Image (cartoon, rainbow, N blue to C red; front, side, top):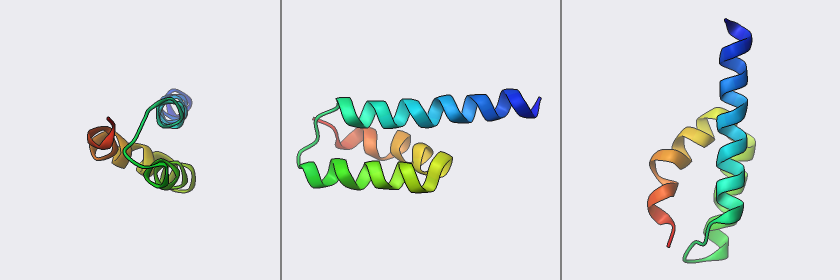
Length: 58
C-alpha cells in the first residue's frame, strides 16, 4: 500500500514539473518560482501548484 501511495506521489510531482515546463506564464520569473517551489517542497509544492499555479498560466 505504501509503495502504491509513494508511486502516486512521484507521478503527481513529475506531472507538476512537466506541466510547469510546458506551460506559458505571464512572466518567466513566475515559472522559475513555481519550478523551485515544486522541486524543493516535493508533494506539497505540487499540491500548491495544482490549486494556485494552474490559475496563473496564460
